[in-house]
Image 1 (cartoon, rainbow, N blue to C red):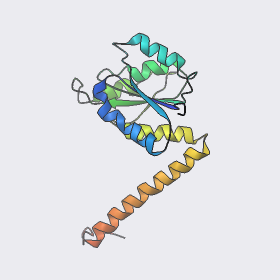
Image 2 (cartoon, rainbow, N blue to C red):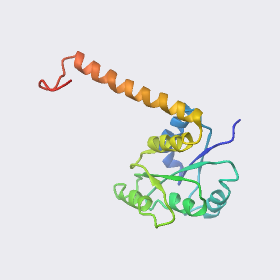
Image 3 (cartoon, one colour):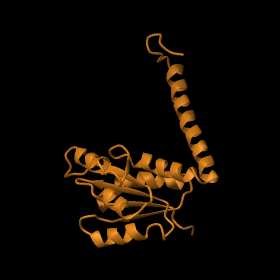
Image 4 (cartoon, rainbow, N blue to C red):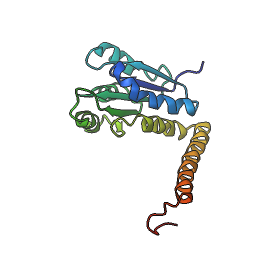
Length: 173
């Protein structure tokens, strides 16, 4: 088994429904990853040990999802110099997700966290792959194919709509 290059961590098991979307992208692109629960508030020692040892374990990118106060991405970023991608999660105790978005987005100078949209784990997985692809040609090639497939899917949707007479009051190509 290959050493994980990306870690997907989340504040609680309830975040898995969202965070598995990052895992699905990495699986599709054949990028080895690990996935676990680390709570900044309930398991701070585990978080510190993870953050401080991430590089030595061979990790290259960390995706951290959290809801509510959402301290996990920023706290992990303070413990490592690896890129951290934060996924704000709309949790049952959140203020419509805004608390999570702002907690991750508003990091102090010197402790950056790349932040994706609320519940945007799929984009976090793609961004992690793009970070790896900047140094790994095999990953870059897989991303090229991935993006071409996205384009083909949109073009098929457009063709299907137009074939069924939905041309938007004469506006179209």
